[in-house]
Image (cartoon, rainbow, N blue to C red; front, side, top):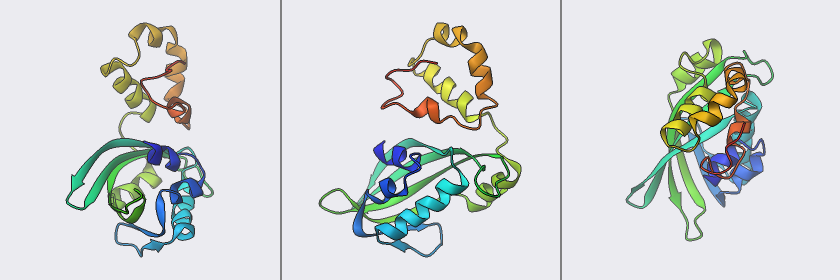
Length: 178
């Protein structure tokens, strides 16, 4: 979960810090970014285009000598020249780790065409904040009473450019308050 938090931090060096000094990050079929500075550059591009980005941890899966990290990105295309449209896309990274637990190789994958479509026309599902609130309710991490006391604020989340505040705590199961 620290890795997902790093992607939402607006600090590209935090993302790069999870990689070995000469580690690599390849996104879809692009050229690999090799070394922490190049990896920070990739992170910076996403952070600039999607300044309210929240990356949610969906799971980990061992695959032989590799680990697959599943994630879902929620953001607004509000960076320079952005459309202001909401984006939600899921993907994964397949990692090879060194003996210190740093990523030596990451192959990222997400549906590029769908991501690019959403940058232009937006995500057509529920607002990310609503999805987060439904998950919190379903998992029993927040009560209906707490939510109903703050329904005006919750309705305001639908129009919010960012759900970052909803994720700015160590664990969703701890300290939920509106």
